[in-house]
Image (cartoon, rainbow, N blue to C red):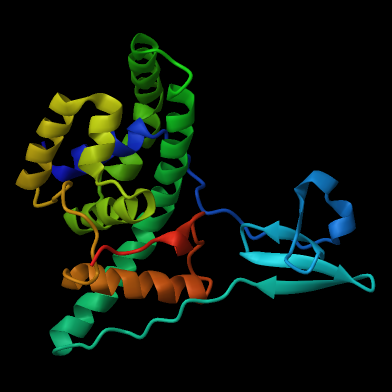
Length: 234
């Protein structure tokens, strides 16, 4: 089995939706939001937090005041040569293609975790099988042409967001034996689903982290919930 099929199965398992990239919401006065959605800052001021735009919305003298989250700035890595630089921009193109799929897979993984807490083991197995079967036909053509590089990026993004490798996620939801075989197939396709994301030791991960920060700061990619809490193990 090549990695395209392996990644297809993984994504189908999380129940992908076609439109993962959410549109930015239109700001409105906080008085129009339900009171239970409002928060209070350290000075006692009421505000609404817009998750999609990563901003606090205050209302002062009848006008909206928007306070954006602090941006994390990260310089481009130093390139050893022109080939190094070309690879950096090559990864950026691949990241742009994979990122919407990653966002949806992350969302569905979190949903599945919540759902499976309410089910016994027998019901969990049935739930997973039914969900995968239902979505297989819909997304196979969409995902079949993903490349090995895109598969690697997907695996690293999942590890960055969840703290778990793809191998660990599969083992958690499908069992150890299944995870073992998926790792074998991933290695054959030159994708290491056990390998963690670490920009301090992996040159490709260093490039990927730089690209993520740049795209988030410039608004090209939508940050996922909790993206700022990631800490690399040195």
